[in-house]
Length: 105
Image 1: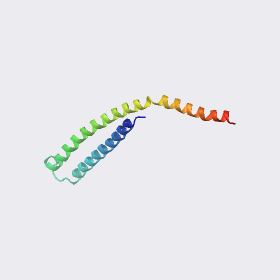
Image 2 (image 1 turned 180 degrees about the vertical axis):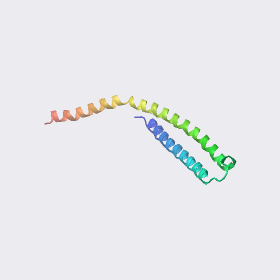
Image 3 (image 1 turned 30 degrees about the vertical axis):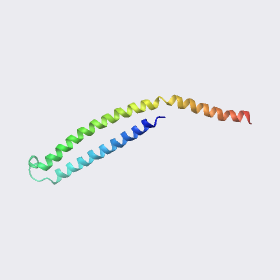
Image 4 (image 1 turned 90 degrees about the vertical axis):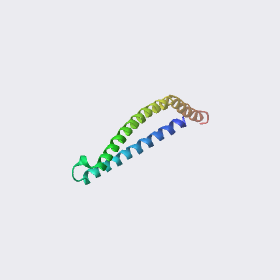
C-alpha cells in the first residue's frame, strides 16, 4: 500500500473529469454561438474567438487526457506488484484462523 500512488491516482481522475467538463462546456458555447449566429459565419469575430479557444482547449485537454491515461497505467502496474504479497498475506491469515479451530475444537 502506497498512499502517494492512491493520492496521485485520485488527483488524475479528478483532473480528467475537470478537463472533460471544461471541454464539454466549450463545445456547448460553440454550438450556442453557431445556432444564434446570423449572417456570414466567417465575419462573426466572437464566433471565431470561441472557435479558436475551443480548438486550443481541445488540443490541451487531449494531451492531458493522454498523459493521464499513461500515468494511470504506470500507477496500476505499480499497484499490481503488491498483489502477490496481499494474496500470500490473506492465505497466511486464514490459515492461522483455521489453526485455532484445530487446536481448540
